[in-house]
Length: 265
Image 1 (cartoon, rainbow, N blue to C red):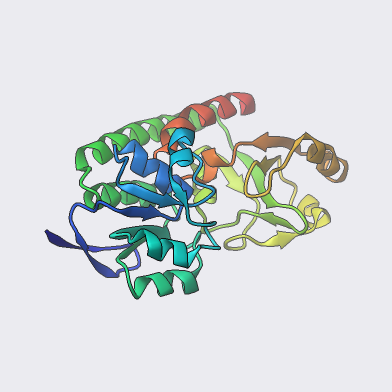
Image 2 (cartoon, rainbow, N blue to C red):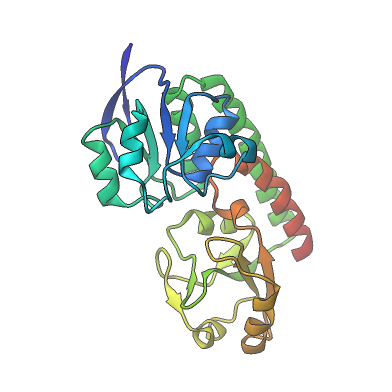
């Protein structure tokens, strides 16, 4: 049966419904598909789609999120490809769109993420499962927001995602929205992911500096380097998946962020 769907770039695609040969180009959305109960339908994923690890090991790897193996994707003959505007390269996505139905997400907030879960649930015939996930996510993040207010968490934070050059999550990003829900005010006013020198960051006087585990794998050794330049700030390593993955991982993020809030009271 053919059905039409509109993706988050306002493009209409037509697919054989429900799809049986799906390729996922984004780790958080791959994890979501498995969480919704799909299994054999997922025939290809990226080398970064590591959750759940047992499913990752069994699937064909079609390159990285920004370096897709187009020829291998063609060999797999998908009937649906699911990607994301920010994480995948426009030129490669447009190439795939010429031959395959490609559904794209475009996510900046928690509400966008929940909408994506709903829409992907509809796309793959898993509406009840998607609805339940959103119920858990909504309840968890409502509690987090309430706790942040009750405990008076109101700190200025810088969230570093890269080194050489240092890059931060700025406004108009999913990370920025998750920070705000937890009572944390982003010291970066620029949009997206601006570069910065540590001396410039010091002038912004953040209370907290989060060093993310991804995409750059910040480690303990990097903490002291930043503390020497910005001694007034509390510098912490954080799990990047809990701030930037916008699928079913959000359920696990609630507990992680609850524990983080407790450290900040």
